[in-house]
Length: 618
Image (cartoon, rainbow, N blue to C red; front, side):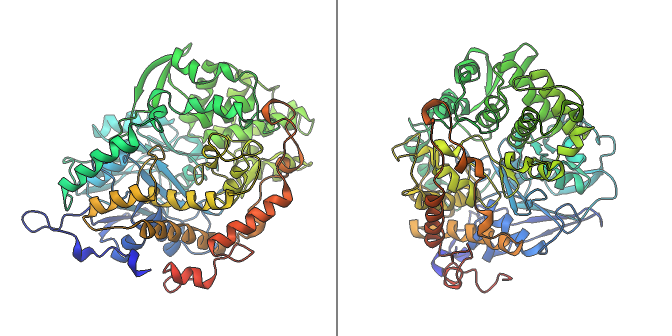
């Protein structure tokens, strides 16, 4: 374990004798009830163990949020964390983490957001911001170099996302913004936090955590945008090499040429594109909402800080220029709802974004509602109007009801698990979630590794923890078997735990060796592949320990019965369903590879090996 520690005394000094570091060396702690603002040094041992970002954020939440705390109460905290690469010249490093306890799932909840907010926070002098307690009235936080203020946001409360951002820029000039919309204010558990116009911390009800604290948003501005590195020449050389080897390459260029809409056809062709609330994995009208349509309607593109790929797009629609929906939104709000017009889909997504809703959870929830109505479990009278698959106008009306908690929208505004609990009548079978988190836009019957990846994800169903479909249905591994999927899932989870602690984007196709090279160059201290792997494994086990203390066990690590019991009826995976016995064996294998017992609890020797046994409250 000790081999993984960063020895800060070995880091070189900058000219003039000051310590050059990839860290800002300051944590900002804000208590909203007390209206107190303090700075403190980050714990060196935690930086050594967890690097920053995901790892550091989870450790603060583990340490400071009491077991069993109400995630919408004053005891919960929000940690906004940068990483050692944030704000550097490293490509695809313009991201930051937003970490808290989820009010939706009860698990740890960490989101990763692009744009320029994260680098700006680092330039302003902070590695992380810890937000505590609850304000008496709506507020926003203003950060500018050494000046930090808690300001009144009563005039912003009730504003949609775009309007609130515009008002904050009018008041504060050229700032980077982070806000919630009406859905977060009204504590919808599928509400999100929006950053720099088009970037989102979407999942786990993080918008409701902000809303519960009466925190409308945060703005940040830095006058000087510079980070001193111990050995800038070495870092530049490493970045130059990795740019050629792993950024502007065939493996990554799709993000530049197409962005995530390219995945629509890939998923549809392997039976993984969700349709009709995951009844099917193939959509015959996918050609109307795929990357070709985005290209036909192309208006402009934009990028996060320090990113040469610029994967984001805006498109021309009947309602004007709108951000092109990402794959997850296309899958969950397009094919899953049987929409077949890109203009309608983009507009529905824009309405959701502006209200501050997570489009993955929302699309899943809307499909759940439509299936219940189709099956006669709920009526149009209960909803308040008639709506059906492919009804764009009706879907937008439902979105607005959910975002504002109006009528039927109030009943379902907390996601499918709670909606099913409230509705009853056997509706639970059609709620497509794991641990309370709605399943994203990859049907696991088309790629069986995704079933294990979803189920073992530490924040509930998540496609990002381990995107196994890239190696399976999109790669060379047989997709309809569990063979090799336990190791693949574990390795990807550990790899991403490190990437999200640095923090770098998922689209930078790095392995452990490249990450070791990056860390070595950034800190001017040698890192090995085993050291990097151990950091990732440590972070994953830390998140697991948080979830265990919140009551999660093996029984929570399963996909919905639909995937085991109902085969697809059309497309390339017609007749295919998940094998239940094989899944049990794969889950056993996954636990064994992790060094956990059969109930999914880390063994004492695993925690000791990772340096987690002595200083965690276990």
